[in-house]
Amino acid sequence: MAEEEEPVSKVMLDEIDDFKLKAAYRTYSDLFNEADSTEDRLRLNDLISRLLNEEMSFRSFYSELNQYRERSGRDQRFNRTRIIGQRKRAYRRDQQERERIKRHKR
Image (cartoon, rainbow, N blue to C red):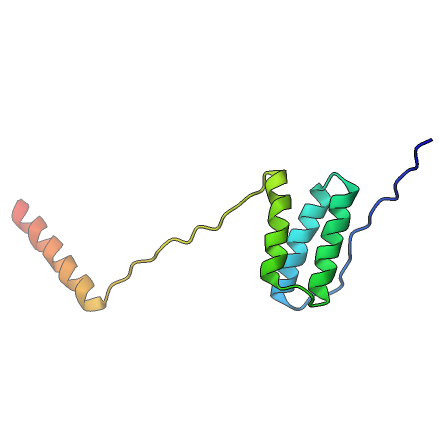
């Protein structure tokens, strides 16, 4: 008979005050729930416990988690949009020019 593997339990945390840690735990939790193999779940448990014990930085934690995100098809990239602003005087000058052009086109 084949030996049955014990199910790997998720690391549970009570009342996380640190926002970064809360976000990391949520990501870990989602990936843990989607993980198929026992070794993936063990690896995820190891990663979160190393992060909690401050043996690992957040940057390295997320870089390690990326391989699990890519497998599950959840590879989401954050694209930063550039906000272009202008000074009040420049905005008014451009607005007056547009109104002047509009007024003379009639």
